[in-house]
Image (tube, rainbow, N blue to C red; front, side, top):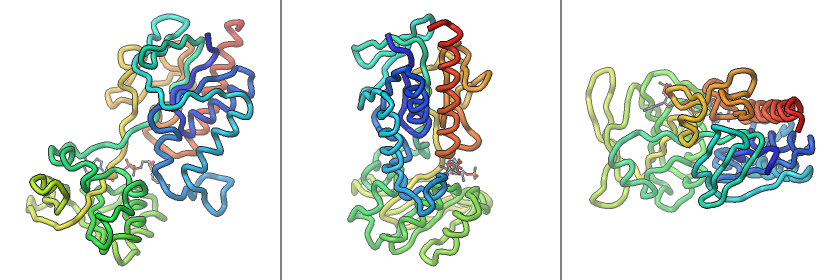
Length: 310
Ligand code: NAP
């Protein structure tokens, strides 16, 4: 029987692990399929306090893991949580056939990339359609080619700027005529001579499934309704994220858009189950805010166990 099981290994998960470990709770961290979470798919993190020169996303996560493990956090790699039973205590967490029983659960399951929802998007995934510039941008198929980035947030601006290292040109396709991104990211992207914004436009289709590679996109101007084709070798989709909460549906309160609803601090609708990071936060969604709520979740779990006399 565990005291605390933490699902997820992004900034929220590792910070929860660090605090729970320092409280002698011997937390178990289930890393999920992507140890370190989405931050490992980014390049340099420039806004995590304490790193004036910036820090590589993967390195930051490895440092957090090391720090948590130093105080006794146990790491279970790769295992995917297939099912949970939160109807009674101890809670049960299934990793395929194995079951872990735990007195408290911290959900720090993060979020996944949103898809455009086009049929050809799925058919051409990894054949030119991607959700991660830092993972795939340097691939030979994208070198010296025109590329399309879809989205208007920080991710889209960051990806577009990063891709200018490899691409001949980067089209930043956004559905409005104003970026959502923070000012510094927006200015950096729009000031880059290789980046051309395509305003008020959405991608309606991606070509060319018959060639098994991306050769272009069909764009639609949402104001005029006019459609046009744009040649490109890659489509980088950066339109936000969906919380990874499907396996908790029906067991804890979850909003219609998938975010977990917390009542008091990080407490979910089930006492003893806490949630933190991107699966809760539709507003800030920063590494530092995720880490902050991870800390809160561990403190809430520790207090809960204390009150229960464990
Ligand atoms: P985001 O801020 O939610 O932006 C998503 C963008 O995609 C928006 O511009 C949105 O358009 C557009 N979009 C959404 N659905 C779409 C659809 N179906 N078709 C076309 N466009 C669509 O997501 P994000 O850029 O991934 O950022 C997520 C969070 O991480 C933010 O809080 C951001 O600040 C943070 N972040 C920070 C950094 C950094 O500081 N270094 C880097 C990356 C991300 P509208 O604008 O019209 O809604």
